Length: 296
Image (cartoon, rainbow, N blue to C red; front, side):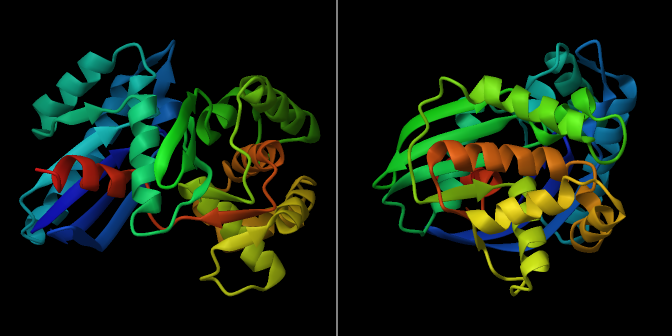
């Protein structure tokens, strides 16, 4: 069977089409659009322009699924819609305009789905997983494939950019503000100690891709040592033309969120004692597929 799963995030709206059968699945197609829904919020509510933007992307995805003859579609939203004051009205408006029902995932459920997707078919003896999104950051401790702790923090790369950055790349002072904000939310969290931090989401992918570009590693490499993450930070923290060139060459669609994401990654790495960062190929959409679609 085939189905499409849409993840409405604070930074991107993403569609993945899967073929699933029995206990297995494989992705057939990925599409996404960077829309920055978090930037459409005013006084805590998503504006009409934000609703129109979300609906436009969803309708484009509907057309694509019709062309592919995929009849099953599931859509969910994370911090992009759960963190606004008019969630119910926005969900109602989207359903009325597109016919798509959007499920709002709690922070805990998002963390659980991210973990299940990231560790599907992969040995997971013990460690810590993080999913850094546009509006929230999830942290999941695990042991022998089972979750031992979950926390969802109300900070993400888009929300941090909107709050602290005045230009394209953050100044030294703005980097300090982002770091202080992250530290304040991470203080008091008993993070699982691990040798390798498992990372999920576009921000982690961007950090790994930039590290690979800087070190000359193969693009397919998914594990980078802490020293390379630190080296990347030292290169980008200058905020100069060379830093911008590196970002535009490797991850042009994340030019404004790379530094907030990198700062978060470093803070988490240092607090959990990890010596390396591993990028997962799967995440919350795969976890949703396993938990909500394939279990039926």
